Amino acid sequence: MIEKRKNLKLRKGKAKNVILFIGDGMGVSTLTAARILEGQMRGESGEENRLSFEEFPFSALSKTYSTNQQTSDSAPTMSAIITGVKTDEGVFGVNQAVVRGDYRTVKGNETKTLLEMAEENGKSTGVVTTARLTHATPGACYAHTADRDWESDADILNRSKAAYDAKFSDIASQLIDFKFGDGLEVAIGGGRSKFLPKDFADPEYTDRKGERLDGRNLPEEWTRKYKDSAYIWNKQQFDALDTKKTKHLLGLFERSHLQYEVDRKNDKAGEPSLSEMTSKSIDVLSNNKKGYFLMVEGGRVDHAHHDGNAYRALTDTVELSNAVRTAVSKVNLDETLIIVTADHSHTFTIAGYPARGNNILGLVREVDDNGNVEKSPHTDGGGQPYTTLGYANGKGYRKGTRPTLTDEEVVKPDYKQEATVPLVAETHGGEDVAIFATGVNSHLIGGSMEENWIFYVMQDAFRFKK
Image 1 (tube, rainbow, N blue to C red):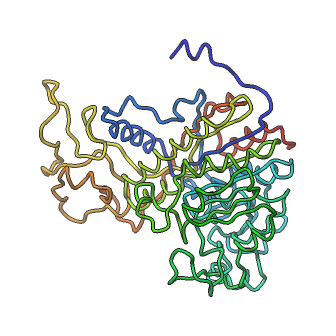
Image 2: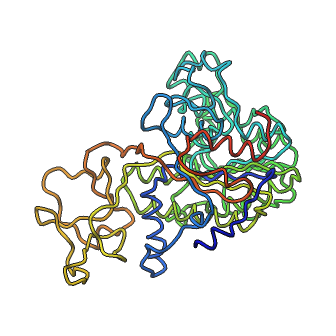
Image 3: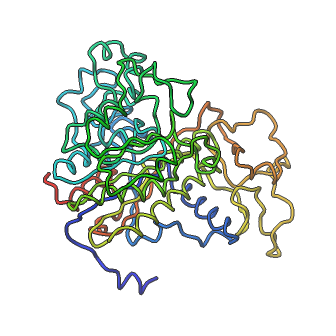
């Protein structure tokens, strides 16, 4: 390892392409547990395994606080990463002068995103997510809003009649009405209901309809607006797509968020994996000889943690790692910068003294005084076994006496790990998260960094004017 570092190649200069991967809620404990789980799924001990991006030559820690939060939500954290400006809770694409929920404070306080800069400089742009395309992380790439929850005009009416009456632009419509360059070339994720009118039947769930009140059918507008464009909503259409002929691609594979990776096989219409979406997006974006900016989000890592469900959080993290590996295999790192990070962490913990190779999802078994792994699970002060993984708060709180857990129970995909404090949903964590980088100017990632510095590394790699 030391010799490898000594001979490390620094790729300095101007980047043609930048790919930013966000593992939403992918804190350090999530990385550790996912790394172990991936190794154990291959029959290994697990601890020695490395996720694809952990092989990157440069890394750092990112300080994720926002201007008014010690522990932040995804709106200001992604806004910091994509605009270089830290801002307040619940808003994105704007500075801290904006008051959440007050549409009147937005004008003049918008902050330009790296995606908008890329479009202005003739590059292609793409946003890929397993969440709704209108959710905080993807939305922050192209929209400017006083409330992250204003995803459709119906959402605006539910939260602010004043903003609705003023016809303030919702996040979904801002994607279609995007005014920089020739518009996004790729937008793939979920959130179909936000794009369809309330009297329009959903193509997959025909007994349900869209939610837009303005009558706009945004997918139809997309195909009318852009020449050589496509709108797709199922796996068959995705597989059949001709990436050489498609100049603008909109993919909406679910009414809300996409399925978790382990549940995709059960989806009625079929959904592509994050790796498949990443690969196809790069193919479409590569049609532009001037290069591209692509943001890829593993959005449901966060959702599984909020649900207290470590299995799905970790398996979605493994799939994000697969997507990164896919991207690396398709690009030239002498002209591309790839950054992998998280917007924030979670209260996810790895505890006890489990023996090496102990099932990361299982009950804790320690090493006894003779160096042998205990046959029976270790117990707490009341004689009850416990798991390695847990949460500081959330749905997994057990009132009264702790239950007698079994190995079979705790490794099931639906199991919710125990939580210390009872909450309707587990919360984010406020500690630093990791940043990994490879390719052009990746050596600028290092040390302890403010989260918004990530933007300046990407902007500098593109040589965009400040």
